[in-house]
Image 1 (cartoon, each protein chain N blue to C red):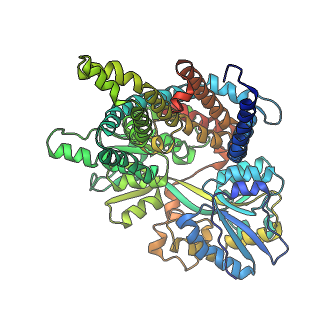
Image 2 (image 1 turned 60 degrees about the horizontal axis):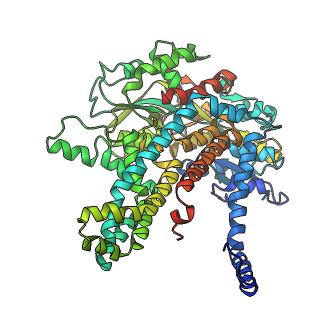
Length: 348
Length: 289
């Protein structure tokens, strides 16, 4: 059975009108991710094989930011989506607000086998990416910046800089630059982080908002170093730009799978969720895109070659150099307050 | 319309009005269904979230972030409007005074950028203005500067690109109003001994003011809602009101927090219209009479 693809951003609104399809056909689910090359890669690596193995139909949908749609759909009492691949924070927040199904891990053995930090009562990690320190090799042919303290050191490493226009990972980087040990970051000392950010602020040329923008900045030599997502940097490097990045002090982030409360095909959704984090399917993902598998057991299969594994953010040795972002902290009241504080920091 | 008119013509007029209403009713229905209702629904959410609340408005009026964004948005809009007027007026004047073939060419050059997406034009400006961009490289090659100028990722870059996008909205109303100024008036002025500049300032300029006002209102109001351009060219520091709207959806997870911002902006725009219409009738601004 093949996976039908229905890409379209307007779905969230259509959902509110109640365009739910009849669920009486053979077993099926609606799976939602973020579209683009990333969803294509999943389709080949995970979705199509899972559909085949389980004998179900996976209807796909995509949306850049699923959160407002999740709120609207569950709020309407009749969601049309079943499984969502979304930044882990959304799953946790959604769980706390009653928008997500609590998972029964006895039915999800693949998830139950994952380390506890990689799952929550509402979600399992699906894939990993990392906010890393990237730099131009033209500007820094040797002695490249290798830590956030280096990024903050404008004397030793002169050059133009960019950071993401978002507190996620940026506050963590600021604290590491200020000497906080990577394993002692949470709960974040928000005041200290913003103080440290004030210090670097005059030296930041661009606060980027989209991954594409961060790639363009690095590619065009508009900045000499920046925080960026590893996949964006490696894509630019692949096209021939002299850029590199380090996993050292990277902030490891993930998207997770979670199931909407009242999902129309709950039983099938749970079966799919277990299948999607199967180590072999998971190991297939990095063969198609520069993201790491959400299930670390994928590295124990022989699917990923050692050279390839070494490039991936969640490979155990790389992961050891990085900090796992605490989505639990970011979705706590303190985290939400820090998020709100960002805008006033930017405008001052 | 004010004095009493004999019966038959009044009846005729009423029938004509009825017919007109019938003709515009499909358009009105579309506007009602696609603009008035959704906007009303969003506005309702800004004051109702499991009960009446003014929390969203308290935030807008008490937190610094909002005030700064509104101030910046109005500043940028004002700057863009003034620059567009200074650049657009001579173009419209030229198009109005040259033979018809030339004026069509000029106007099509003005309108041409309309066919390019705003996104593409923003990226084009990036390619021109950035540190490694065309302008900086040219200036360095000519030894005019030694260090690249910061032309983009700031308010400057945002204003430049916005002026470019909105310029047609200034030139077209200006041209339309200039077309209505009879050339005889200028000749009359000249025959009475006025210098060309005097005729321009005493006759032409005052008569073109409705076009100036129309163009300025259009550009100003459109600029207030700009999103893509400041997002791409503002370097993250240029936070305009539209960006606050999108940020608030993300931050507060409800539409009310965002629509409160939009409602305040909408009321601001309506207030501007009210003030403008006190000075000049809106009919004239919109090119009616």
